[in-house]
Length: 432
Ligand code: ASP
Image 1 (cartoon, rainbow, N blue to C red):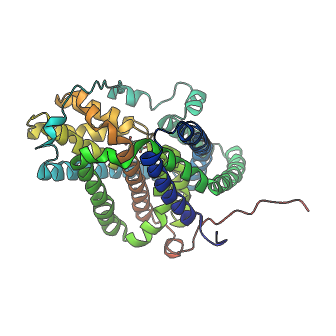
Image 2 (cartoon, rainbow, N blue to C red):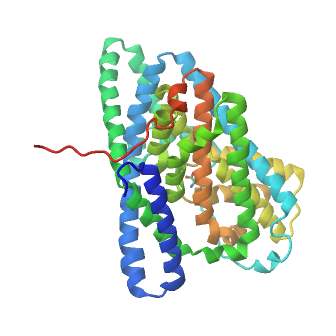
Image 3 (cartoon, rainbow, N blue to C red):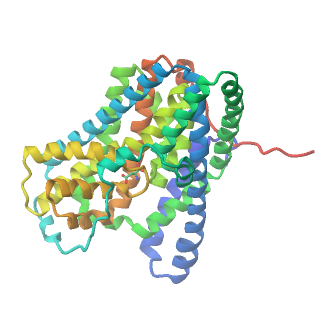
């Protein structure tokens, strides 16, 4: 491979090859014991999972160091509150726009209206418990921060770290010398991210090959109406709504933005987890787009936890689809409940694979749709999870840029420089 090829290009190629290899294995070797045991369940599974673990390994230390640097960088509690409030409101706004778009398109297209009624059967789907909303708020405050760090509870970690960093600001010299040490730790941690990225092409190949050899594209066919409406809405949101917000609220070029967010989208797509993608989103937003660390260190992990535009879109379309399949007519009141519920539900659930379905069960319960209907869309959910996670991450980066532009904390020379922050292979040190 070309030495100068950027890591994103390599990962993109690996992703394509993984998709082709996986789909071919699904079509031609699905009953070969050898392929299933040693390749799909063996090499692909082991290397893919090691790679996801490596990404997750970065999240907690990176968010901690980066957020401390961010808060100390802002240095002003008033501005911190403003950034927090702005990003919270923008995240809620983009999610509400996403689900409204999904409901509108789904009502117009009417997936599941005719023909699909035949697919109703007892799917045997039982919903997992979703956290009650009151607990969501109570649990923002960790009763034991070590527990929060150990379990990767993102909202709790953010809460504790911000409090700790504010205390550092208030502690004079002690806080200052600690901050300079943590800045160095943050720099080193960013280097660890680039080291892990070196292995990304292999990791992404294995994840794609495994998913597609298990899923196969044939699964989509019986669900084509649902699947295509979700994908169309996801594309409309990513390239329409988010672009408009980027232009109107931040005066930034969506073309440059999309070029630079690509690596994070690819990671989100292959891992189906916005949480595991945090290190890459942070790298893209800070180093490639020039958003200052004081903003990005907060908005990116916060967004990965509370902002799920893509997930909300799936929920909107799924609700209309299931209602159509079961022949249930929804009224305006129920649509409004769906919008409110998905926005609230996205706050309480972390960005990990498949969580969208748990949230969907919450929405169904609330509007009185049969929860076992979710079983119908289960088969295609993994593929949709990948696409919607890429949209979730795009939303996080968009809001980060808008908040940064509003606070004058985006370096436009970095944003406009096509080469800024590009990762090529990291030369490993050798002793002579
Ligand atoms: N996998 C999604 C995410 O991590 C959540 C979901 O829609 O299931 O953002």
